[in-house]
Amino acid sequence: MEVMSEERNTSDVQKRDAQLEEVARRAGVRAERGRRFAELTSLRVGGAIDWLFVPETEEQAAAVVGALEETGIAWRVLGAGSNVLADDREHRYVVVSTREVKGKAEFDGERVSVSAGFSLPRLCVEAARQGLSGIEGLGGIPGTVGGALWMNAGAYGHEIGQVVETVRVAREGKIVEVPGGEVKWDYRHTSFKEGELLLGCTLRLKRDDPEKIKGRMEEAKQKRFATQPHGARSAGCFFKNPPGSGLSTGKMIDEMGMKGEKRGGAVVSPVHANFIVTEGEDARASDAYALAEEIRERFRREHGVELEYEVELWGADGEFKDEGGRTKDEGDTDEK
Ligand SMILES: Cc1cc2nc3c(=O)[nH]c(=O)nc-3n(C[C@H](O)[C@H](O)[C@H](O)COP(=O)(O)OP(=O)(O)OC[C@H]3O[C@@H](n4cnc5c(N)ncnc54)[C@H](O)[C@@H]3O)c2cc1C
Image (cartoon, rainbow, N blue to C red; front, side, top):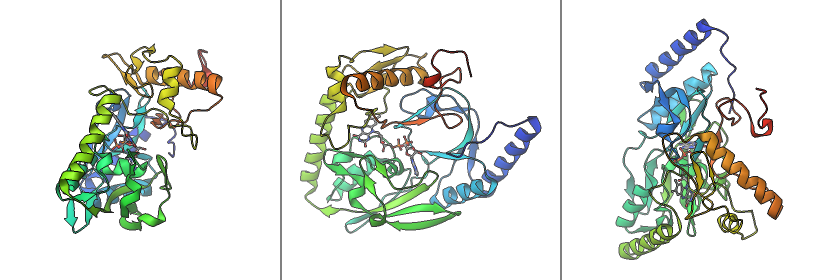
């Protein structure tokens, strides 16, 4: 993310605020102040958001980020917030929420076109009802279609990238259609660039018996229920599996005896060791981060492997820091 420098004085802040009001007004987009990541992410932690823009259509979303780019004001896109850990400080960039960019899923033969803010679980249910197969394994992944596209969400043998025919992307205020074949769909990673807003997509699925599809979806749901905490405040798996190893990070953290380990309001889930869950009103993003770094440190010592985050860490000024403004490397020193 492009990091915005601290405003120098009140008049700079006022100028920027007036500019943002104008950008939102011209694009016809709702702007909200005073929201917090703790309300907008599934981990229920994280600091204040300076400006939240809430477009309702793909056109509005494309126009508003186009205008933000022209002003040079930094922005980030947030879907349902089920894969984001934002630090506890005040985030002074614009958060563009896609949650209202949902419209309807438009089915046409084996194709379905859907906007970025549409719920992925709901899309899976609707596709099954239409007798369309290819995403039933994704039915239990919380979040939006846009979030799933961004990181090539997947489970139980299905990844969204496998069925994408085209993706609609915002470029210079316009909607551009990119063929799915031009995108690199890797394990929880794609070739979309930081700062690209995905507006929607067309998926190409395959005909099958709706009852069979529903059966497979139910099977995936049962597996999930048996192995993952439900109703807990989490972001799913915190770390990726070590690439190309066939090893399970969750199993390895479990074998390190870390289930139930706590830091403040963050706990390694007793159900699934690759899930960090938050508990209580006082839980902080810095608790989850401290626990995650402890896991990485022990993993490095015991397995010689550097765990890569699957969850996205959002720092108020680019780098994730604790409330005192320290990175992990600055440890407990008082330096800021
Ligand atoms: C209980 C639980 C279980 C989970 N299980 C799985 C699983 O099995 N498999 C799996 O892959 N994931 C899993 N996840 C993680 C998460 O649900 C997925 O990553 C999901 O696709 C994120 O979607 P979101 O809308 O919440 O994205 P967010 O968390 O809001 O955003 C995630 C990232 O995507 C970017 N992004 C979001 N929308 C857009 C957009 N329109 N354009 C550009 N960038 C965008 C954001 O900027 C951010 O970088 C799980 C999470 C939970 C809480």
